[in-house]
Length: 584
Image (cartoon, rainbow, N blue to C red; front, side):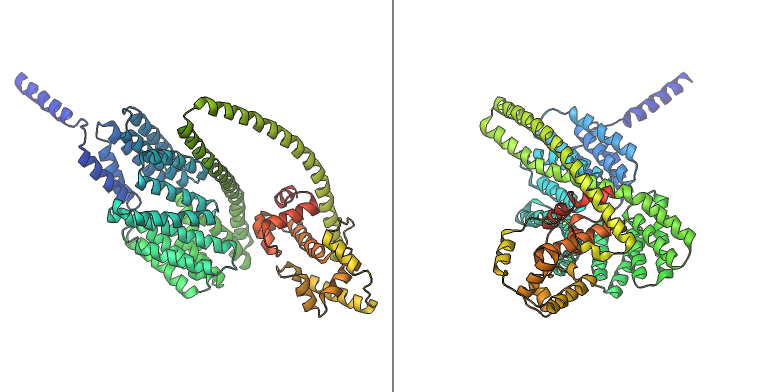
């Protein structure tokens, strides 16, 4: 009996020790890495299997990469606490490795995963931090493949925060680099990097068009890159679906509703056919939005409610959820169902402020870090050139002292300027509110403060001292001017002296003379004042207008750029458009 028990114990111990971790061979490790990368954005559950197999090794390098991979996968599953736990564990295993290029390369991989994770959380500033840290390591290793990844990911961040032109410029340069180094990639890797870059290029062109809808060619560029994305994404369903959705959006923006509808239905079919869980809320929202636009409200409700229910089930209050509730509120309002309209408008408003504030803050952080990123690169090159840390430290100390003095000076000046501007702004708001209550819109033209004339205006007065027009003709010109004001013609970018003179059938000399005589200002001052008064009025009476960007407001009243608009606005009010809006 004792012999049998001893044999059984020996057998159990053998099985136990046999199941303990063993070190993977380098070949096994690389194979599992490739399988993980292939499945990470296609089939998360399969990717988990390969990452967990790597985690069975007792090699610190394998364990570090495995835990970094698992951290990303848990983020895709919205398990943030587990994601953070695995990410910290990855660095612990990496720290146990001896210093070597291999360790440096692994660290750059972990920073890349860190960036992807923060990007998924909407923390674009933190994502950029990770990408910049990883980029420094990859540059030291001269790792072209990893450098391309980081540059592409930084372009994605720029696209996410609205730096569309910068994203386009960087991705076009990157595309050339990828083509020049095609021999470094497997066919699958090459297709993946091209697909990722093209889908972001398409998105940047599309977003640029939405920002400036006069440039129709941007939509054609977007469609071109979305189609290229699809051609490179046969084995990348995430990008393929994303590009198809965006191509549908291009059709929608071109008012080609038939092709847009067909594309959105195709996407839903592909998602269901492949049993995927990506793009489903976007496709449903887009169909709901399309049917709303074409006034098929009952059909729109079906798809918008589907977005609402899927988002709540996944606890994902993303942009689609927000916009779906916006249109649900509008439809129920049209259908005269006030309780449901109120319910969805409240959901929209409760979440809108948070999401806009977060995106705005992230954009500011990203732009600041992009600026300091160049400074960091410069510091590295200085260190390499002179190899003298003492000089650098002294320079930094002087810089910080000057920086502190500068900040203190600016703070004091800013407080003084703010107080003056605040008084002026409050007086303006009260003035406009009084005008609104009395419905005396004409009084907006009568501004008591008269600015010092420009040199050219003085010259104009000298030239027109002897000019004389009979009163009836003057009155006729003023009457026609007021008619143009009532039609809001001054909001057009071409509301110039020449345009208006032609419009009211007079010449520029007479028009300038009458404006100067009757309104006490040059035509340019008169035009700008009308535009700025319109903006002030809209900001006071329309809460949605206050949420527009300075660029959007400038374009809405015919200014060629945001800088000249902001300058005119500050001259009139004493504060920037954003400050004015936030203080109403």
